[in-house]
Length: 180
Image (cartoon, rainbow, N blue to C red; front, side, top):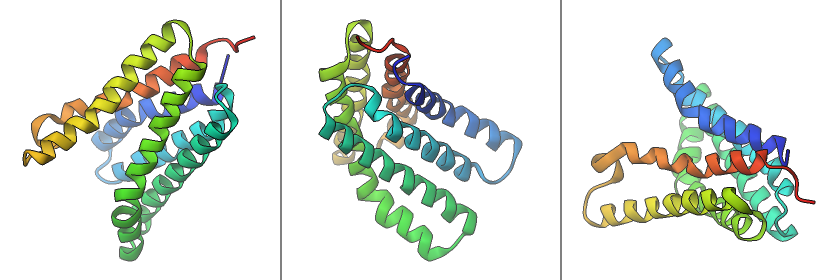
């Protein structure tokens, strides 16, 4: 297997939404904590797995730092929900959670593109092109909707499920045998 941590990360991130939905059906409160902890754990695993995929060293470090920072932000968001401190909530949602989180996700996307171009082969490369193309077009579509005075939430919130496609690709990429 190419990356057990990458496989674990992909599974955690893909299961985060259904587990959170199930949690919300069973318990009245705490779903926000569950999703943020799952995202934090998933991105910690991604951060530790970027070196398994065979991209260039400096690209690995960029991916590692970006996904590690995302994990920290998601952990702080979970902590703010648990602690319910207004200043911490403001910091992690309004300061870190707006621009910085968005830019870190874009950097993670660029690392994915770099991995696709430099290290992916065969059928998973085709899946990667599809997954990343959709994941890149979705924010573009969201920006167009914003320009038109509406949002993705208003038009079709169900399209957000396509943000998970890169993790499906990482799952398959992680399961492949290590290249010789």
